[in-house]
Length: 302
Image (tube, rainbow, N blue to C red; front, side, top):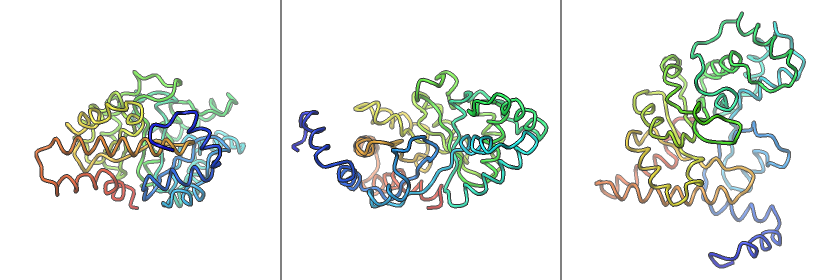
């Protein structure tokens, strides 16, 4: 189809090609080297890591969602007294081949949580309350903090959703600046902390990445949503974020088109931002390579 084809013609052509061929063509055109995939998303229609790697001609590595591991442990019928140990064992198994862990405490509680690591007694008491509730969804603040600290204990990079997202979060409680005390508390643990998405608080996240050596960020979900304002969002992020602290992210899932749009907008926006700087072409290429792939290689040990 020609560029700018009618949406109806596009949908018809996509259906004619079939899902696998459309995915293959779209993903192959993005020029991805590696995909880091949060496997905590529900849905039996989502591709597994092996299929995603095959269609994209890239490696696909797992990011383990901490809350999902806790919910799997609870579903297995563990008691409150055994929960702490059972979660630790399950997390060890799940992260054996993973490149990172992720928490969605922003959705389940907000980022205004007590930064302290809860005691074993607090974890057992909270597990008793949660398991007695019976709905299976981890939203207990004490247990959310526990799995967060356990995730840090793996030594793997920890991703935290921040900023906007789906309707079940409270945006005012997702400002990454609320994480300041937690980031200070975990500074000596040794695990990188990655603030995801961040918008519209990307300047606050950039400040945190500037002042804390172990903190990194991306604006992945924001780029496809802000469209032509993507360059402005990146420029505002880079006001304070060091070049070696910003990572590319698409936050794409489900539709291959999301990978295409995110990558195209990000490349275009980053080019615009870097061309506005008073630096030479060699430095522009070096910085683009850092943000586009080099920083991720280093942080996730790819």
